[in-house]
Image 1 (tube, rainbow, N blue to C red):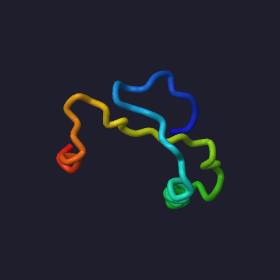
Image 2: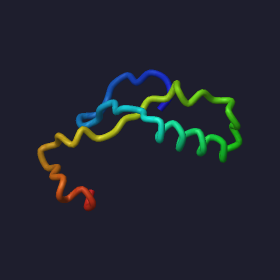
Image 3: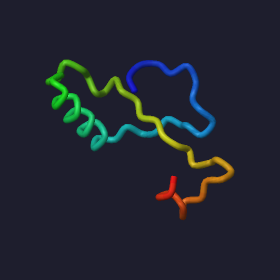
Length: 63
């Protein structure tokens, strides 16, 4: 996600954007024909906080 987010969902948190994520994003943008015209450092990464009452890590593959 690039830019500001008004609010996050009930189980959504901002996560660290590590080098491997930037590299993957850069490659995807390159395949889309952007070829470096978009700065991947402006993107932010979000995902599940895994705090919902019915989430259990042993069942992660089922979700």
